[in-house]
Length: 273
Image (cartoon, rainbow, N blue to C red; front, side):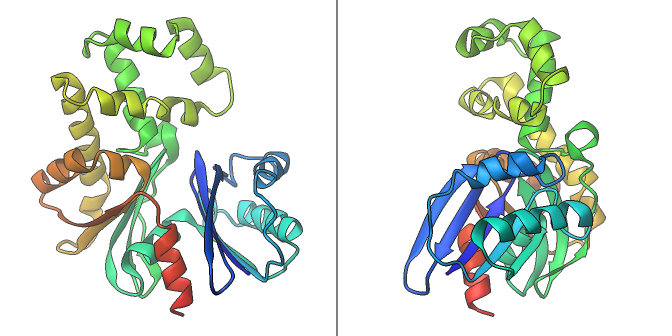
């Protein structure tokens, strides 16, 4: 039984394949840097029993060569939960690259809760502009959209303050508390993406979203070899696809594939090895 997982900070897609049948399960996301062993175990406990597992291929936020300690923590927890030592833990960015381009070449991007990008070739990452996380970077991701939206409604640039507060049942005081004093601030900020999407015809919202995607292009994509196809994985990329294509076309990017989850592409990649 092979298990392949693609995890962002908000949600994780698990594919269970026994060689003849494939089952997909979704749980909360796991960020190996942000989450403790106990939090990781709590999320793994959401998975149903899946029989004898021979190998696990986990691609996740906060994993990979940049975070060796967090990756080893994740590997230990997966090995203990599934009862196998054949566990590899890689970054969600490498997962997106392999799913979107296989062993080909291009610019692979993630636009989900956060954002990330790389130049990939041969199933490996050749260059990565550091995303810097939701405080310092993550342009174009859900947190970036949520942060800019809240800034806009409370400072008067986006005329949807009362409608937003009524729809969410939130107050200014609670928003400040949730962002600055409670855990999972990134998830909280990204949770406003559906409201933003539903009001994307509002001129001020539309311009905010386009500007966020243009920021992603100018601060990240401009650093890679030009002329390569740029493909995306992630919920923000998939749900805002028309605006994403418009913004990046204006920046001279050649857009390729846009998928919500790279899980199916990863299954194809590993079965094709």
